[in-house]
Length: 343
Picture 1 (cartoon, rainbow, N blue to C red):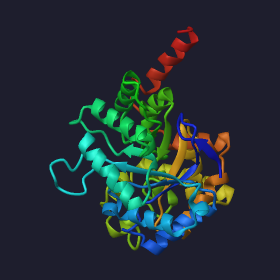
Picture 2 (cartoon, one colour):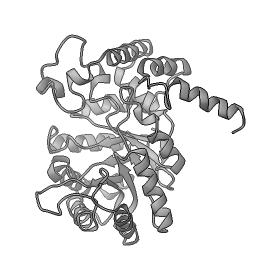
Picture 3 (tube, one colour):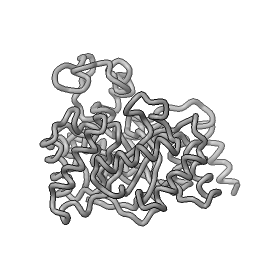
């Protein structure tokens, strides 16, 4: 297992993290504890959850796991959680206000059974709360010893840049990470979000690196999914819905991943994860699994790195093909000319 700095902080985390959105929903408590044990035994350290995962059940399951294991067994864990979304329908039950975040963090700490979390992430941007209020609140959490670092999740480029510079202007602790969706099927963050994160020194904690299971090879062109899979149970589920994501580009990417996996003698998931892991600014990949067996397969990607030729094939197949300007070919040509002219 490789270890990388948590953004511009001095904290090291495993290059593969454990996502726990399935805990208490698709994975029962014994299965979740089995995943946590296996993850730590494999050298994993970053455990990522959120207050809304299973309506708090994920945090409770992790808390009972932490309490039931010897202190030495869980000491390496870098614990991350999130707040933003509602767990009830009260008027102030959501958002990034001081009131909601304070209550949300205190509730997360109780469920997790800890005095502090290593990384507290705001789960999404809140257009109704002044960002200054949010930054001051998070800085206060850090000063009070309730959190050690804070990060962003699902922020756009301008939103994260505003948060970074506002923290500097307020002389407050700033974010160290951004958690975006990123995979061979979702590369649009490379246009603005990745450059903004790199400029600010934020590390990326990427979610859905397998495109909701598409890049594991479980779905076939022209065959609507069925059986005990996410889309088999509901083909129209979420962002990875079969009709929405089953485009020609998706199948081209799957074919490229499948070919390289066959040549390497590894799973398609390992190839897809290795590609994300080696992208610029990526600190850790958040792995999500229903079972310990699925997690074990994904963890094999820890020591896998692609060759430049393999990466080039995947880059070409997954190119989102932006329009001409400013992200497409004409924009790139202009930037190249400016660089060549010394500008």
